[in-house]
Image (cartoon, rainbow, N blue to C red; front, side, top):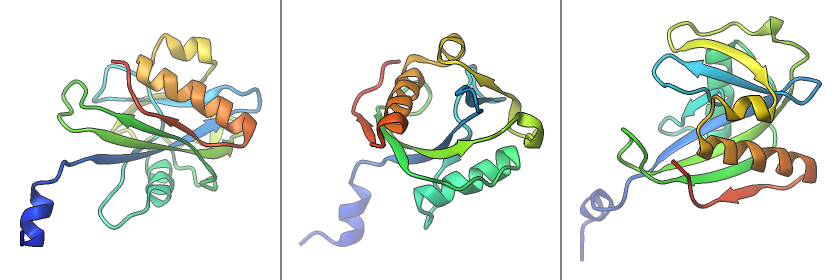
Length: 156
């Protein structure tokens, strides 16, 4: 019999990330520009040990934006294979975090973020990589239909 510690040490490792899908009243999505990436993305981050993905989403929104919206329904689950400098797969959870009337209530976390803004899908296509644009399209469809989407592949 293989000891449990050996068994688990040999398993594939996966990173979990949790982010918030927030829009303004006109339907533009809230995106952030991390200072450690070349592209814009969702507000959110990695799930800490012992933390549920929805808890991580709420914590990250508060840390990054000073916002505490209700973390709602799961919109998208995305399996992202190793990409760029990340050598292990990522399971990404994107939660519906509602609508923010305007960006005036945002308090940006300057240590990690250079900026934020509200963008249409066409505008986002110019600043987000294809795999995040796939999440955006899936999130918009899932929110409108009251469903959850699964994306099993990523495009670099």
